[in-house]
Length: 321
Ligand code: UDP
Image 1 (tube, rainbow, N blue to C red):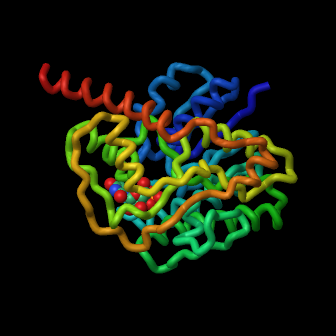
Image 2: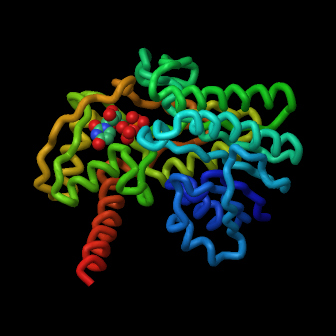
């Protein structure tokens, strides 16, 4: 039997891949999105299906009064460029979005999953980061609207679970990437690929020694669904990420190699509070969900590069026409 599933932020990069996978598995999907950073292009191919519905709405407003079996709460701008453009709005999205999702779950008995983030570890003093690490976030810095919003959302999830017995799951995602990230998204992988394909300088912020661990979107989606369907002894928080770590300089070199670009590398100032190291400890996901990533960075980059190249060629063609 298919489940009735609400995906908030379902027209975003990650949300649209999740909607697609859940739909493919036979479920009924309601995709809620305010289209602030998501786009209808991401879900255009799903709109023709009867089991997929798009609802334009904002998670800061109370949710439609409907019963679901599952709620995946993804809605929130995730790129520093986007979440810092309206920091108060970002914090409200995490906090009010969590409350609205949890209230609906409390009233209707839905199970609800929060997509939290490695950002809750801040600029970590423990490396790699296990789930029990409580983090080091600068609560007055420019990233705090996202980090502290996501931390508050985790708190709300656990309090609704303890106070009201709501069935919760909390996933902490580490730098997901894949197709459907916008070229102007501002995050490092779409930036580098767009710059490399256009022959423009690759912009490394700082000295490039900071690290990230990049998880391909299909792996992230599989981790989220496994956590949602795990038994009640596994509510999280669980790290979902790829444990293979790269410096940003290594990433730049890899993008140049895989695109065959002759772009030069240039340096730009490191943004405030940019975490120096980030790598998930995924022992919990391996043990409890039987999950680990299967797509390596080279393979994932090749998939994204192929689509980005096609879109750039299409754009060039329509400009010439
Ligand atoms: N970064 C970079 N050049 C860019 C975009 C980002 O060097 O054009 C760096 C950024 O400073 C950070 C890392 O890449 O150290 C990852 O940045 P992103 O915005 O993708 O994600 P987050 O910082 O939230 O992990």
